Image 1 (tube, one colour):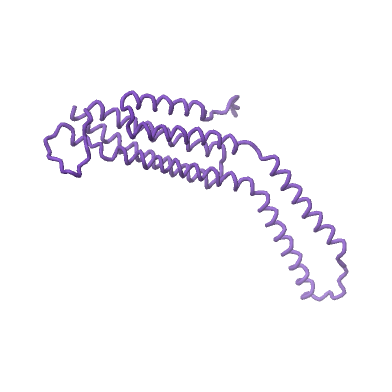
Image 2 (image 1 turned 90 degrees about the vertical axis):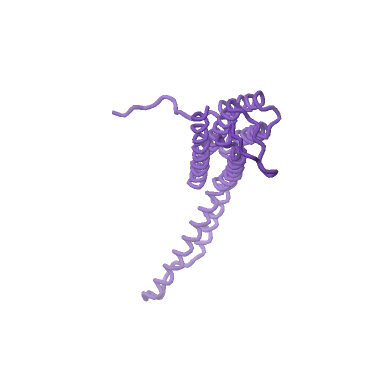
Length: 236
């Protein structure tokens, strides 16, 4: 039995951005003017730009498509017009001559097909380029999140170890450290969700592969953070 779904389940960019807005406010309430809050604010602006970019990607470029159709029609029409001036009578019916003519025709067909393929895929390649650019920005944000949580070590909580002059400052309480790590994990998860919007709107193999790599990066980051949270809960 085939069951046809009435509505297709998709990620909603507005709800994702709304979640990022709430996360930025939560970080600001707990850690005002912190580096994590500024980072989340930058991520929010990137998500809003990505939403506009995804809306552009999802819509067909009518002007470009009409122009390409005219170019293809003009090329095919020019080819047909030129064929009418070709003398198709073959005086020399030797096999070598027939093979030579057939090879020339075949090469022309291949070149025309390659040209048409190049023109037809222009729109997808333009959209892919814009998507990859934003996805690379998301990848950078994920690495910056990793840098922010890097020195948040639960093993250094409430210890009497002597710090050196180059040691990072660790002034967070257990509760603050727990919230900081949770916010970092939530941000990394939202980064993956913004990336998934591109794969949802443009199922291009290169775009999907890039989104999968970003999801793997964010999943690995969240796994490291939750390992720290487990250690922290054992110490409390």
